[in-house]
Length: 163
Image 1: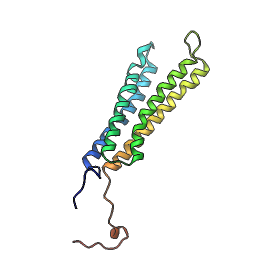
Image 2: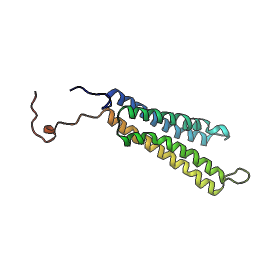
Image 3: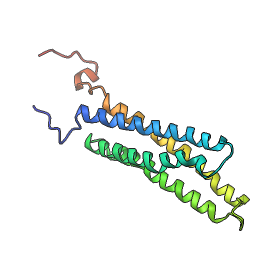
Image 4: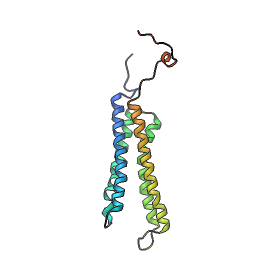
């Protein structure tokens, strides 16, 4: 019986998925690092978070789409494909949090307690992005390097005859 690559994700495509998921996770880790760099920059100005913004608004969304396409090509389960595109949705939520928080600044452009409470959700959502990327990578690795299922006889503990 021959394998049909259209009905089963090939091993190499699954490995491509795992690598792209690993790159997505790496980009999420870099994102946290760049946030810290921006936060500790002295003096702080508009360029302090430029790399953080670029990575978050360009690199992570593109890698999420690439990994999602690879997951679909690898014939990953639908739930896994949905989980792989989730970082893109969470990045959109990140931008909405910043925009919403800015709406509650005072007339001089300074933050207020309400805007800070909203903007604090940016960090929590960022941790969610990291967690989802970690789950995607773990699941992609399991898919790429899964061991074949044992035959019925071997799974039941009965001796298996060699043909």
